[in-house]
Image 1 (spheres, one colour):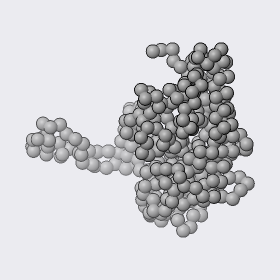
Image 2 (image 1 turned 180 degrees about the vertical axis):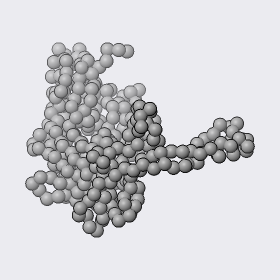
Image 3 (image 1 turned 180 degrees about the horizontal axis):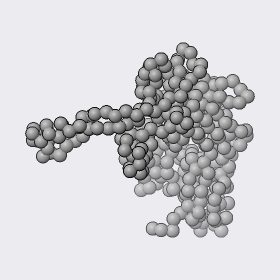
Image 4 (image 1 turned 120 degrees about the horizontal axis):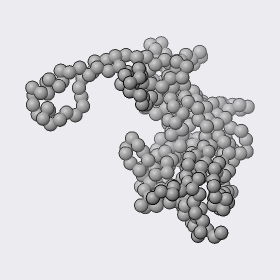
Length: 335
């Protein structure tokens, strides 16, 4: 069958190649990091003020405005904070890197799968994982995975533990969040480990610890739970924080999102975004990779596999990163 008559498999899926754990929050001291203890979420009720945008009819009438402002904004929320004796947040998580062979875990079209594997094997042989591995390594070294906790930290040390070798230690604040140009011996060593894991050259399991000096008694920011059952006890709170075994924690999905925030190849890129098929950034309500300009994953992927039209090198990195992320990519029969 020729490439021109190939059709995308209706059932096509890739398993993820990064197994990321949840991250658990502990507290300790910057100058004495022994015996860290768990941070526990606590609940408090507060009487807030009305601060949302009001209807013009209310805002323009002083009497109605005063009546609205007089209403109490009562809330019950979860909070997480260091105690008054500790000044450092410790976040622990692990990353297992699995081999990327270019073979889908599910495909219902043998001819399509053959062409797909040949295309991806060509990328692996000719290009390899150097660029991707360096970007993933940088997002560990710069502690992007701390999210809001990173912003409020005076100093951050990231420690990567690998069985059988010395710990890798990074001063996170010295690594950029906007580009991947930096290089040093430690970063190259971490990138090499990730590369070897993706290439199937060795078993790679990284244990990552981030020490963030945020100040005694300061609030920290675990993941917030999405409560679908508003009638439950949790649903009665304005904010419910995630916990594992009574310890504040961050979802693995949030850690994974930070790890794969490596896409600076989308049109007019100004900052890295997470690798997504349409370049979606939900917090901005924007898709940075539009199908109408053929920069989305499916346009690039189909042209590469079905037509043999290899995209620019940086877009090949992007396509490979999407497949490393994993997901379901079959062609729907519905219009």
